[in-house]
Amino acid sequence: MNQTIRKRRTNAERSEESELAIYKAAISLIAEIGPHDMTMAMVGKRAGYSAGLVAYRFGSKQGLLEQVTDRILQLWSTRVVPEIDDKGMKRFMDSAEAYLKAAESNTVMMRAIFRLMQESYTSCPELLPYFQKFDASVRKIIQDAVKVDQKNGKVGKKLNPKAFSVIYVGLLRGIAIQYFINPKDIDMGPVRRLVKSVYTTQLSN
Image (tube, rainbow, N blue to C red):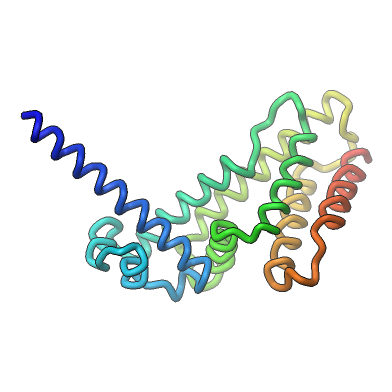
């Protein structure tokens, strides 16, 4: 009986290990060539498994892409998107700084999330609902934070929380895309300082 239990545990561990390898392989390929050109065979080869195992685990390329998108957005949320606390909008100044530093580091995950996002409204529309939901949740967090600080007098009453949330996200993403295109031409230090100044000015109006 102990041997049976050990065998089951080992199988579960192997399954978890192979699944993680497939996720990592898919994310790296998405970062390199984009989700549209990625194939199940490519993922299997890079992960060290067969395309058949990838298909068995995820059903189809669409199934794999949807699960990878869901996983990467969850990881991104825990690392970059903060929760509202008593620090109010200061937390979002820190978040903007962290976001731009992540863009500057040009990690595989950062490149992958931008490739997925861009192709969600072009060649991979099945991914669009994931990003619509994610963006809506991010903007809602920002809007709520603005409202909290408007109530306690730290943010100007004239500021439109909904409009600010769109500008907040759009400015950061626009800078990140420019950096990905030509990193040698952009000095992120002064950019980060100016972004903080722009947000501070808007919040004080």
